[in-house]
Image (tube, rainbow, N blue to C red):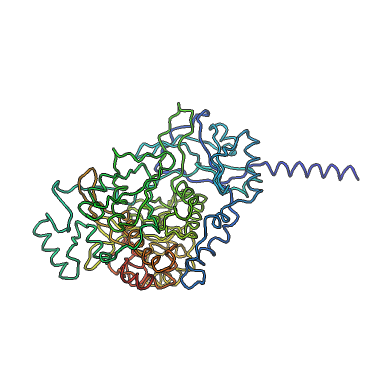
Length: 604
């Protein structure tokens, strides 16, 4: 009898050990349609893997964020310090030891110099052969992008030991096939005549255009505005910031995100300011530069998106200082290189840097004009990005993302990527994240309307993120007003966006010393950032806190009363007319566009 018990215990022990070391699927994604598999990655190729450990404070993160972001809360504006916010990110001690033990068992040594300050990211350099063994025989292949020719080493699925998975959010880069793009209507720059100088926006246009402009001015459009050549002076007049005098240049920073080797050019900014903000040029206003993950911000290669962002922020927000965060992209795969490929993931690389900054170095506003199709971004990576955005909100940063330029989705391509090809609207990410404030696009001035038909601003409903409680009343009312239109094409219970909008068509910027026009929600987002920075300046001068995470103040506070409601147009896409703009919140323009004087009255 005693022997039987001992044998039974031994068998249970062996079974438990086997169960603990057995691999279970951690993540699987569909084969990406925009990437061509070129073949297996060589076993000897060296790569760097990052291991995202579960953060122990995430369950309380949303509650804390709403507590400091909702105007009616007694803790409104009582933002956390770096040390306080860090508590949400730290993993449990068991998580760190478990993951490190797993790595050691496979002969992989953690690169301690690359560990995040909070300890929630571990990093290691290893060969493809070792990565395959570590991740349950994950098959790493070389993939080439159909349009750009960019090559990446990725897998479509990986597994981890059963006793590790509960401590691990994700391993990257593994299943995320970057399709991040600038939301700049294709980032197309349309040069204007060489002698064009955008002093008023009314110069050098045809007689027919002048007659149309005159008619619009009579209807209420500012005299500085022309809808086909939108200048900084026009935007300042239209959104009523022209008369505001900035009271301090030392209490906040406007942050500008730069990805995809988009380089911001100092000479072009000066050329722009000489003509559009002469007082800024006279003061030698420049953006500061932070280079992340090996970026060089080459001045020989000015980017359309980068120049649009820094110039628009300067045109509106001067003299508030701005910083351009240039995050390097991933270079082409080179099988003969035995050095780690630059495998940073764009958003988390930038957010991790920002989270580590002391309070006086953290931007009060962060403007990001990039995004992906939501369904192409693995859920684990979405969560990581969203939670890091929430941490920035807890510290008082207003995180803005553009909504995209494809309406509810590109025509002819609106199907699920799960192998079923189900027809559906295609939301964008991080625009669909509930912890960011998302900016759509408008055009014209008398009246202002949802942008189109040059392009249509993104808007819709997340298939990943549930509808936040703070937007439920407004969004449910809008859905009811649709009377069942598009039922089945979108998720009625998903996070709805955009939250607000702004002008986004035919902005005049400078590239290589030449003026031209650029459009997109890539324009409306830095524009909104500049306006909100001015509002922050007013609040801080009066002893009030920064705006921080803005969305709850729009949906639950009086913030929407400071916006111009847009009721014309829609965001066409997916071979439909898209969601219509309506009174109140709508999925084409959100609550509307910023009116600085009205916002100052309700939020200032």
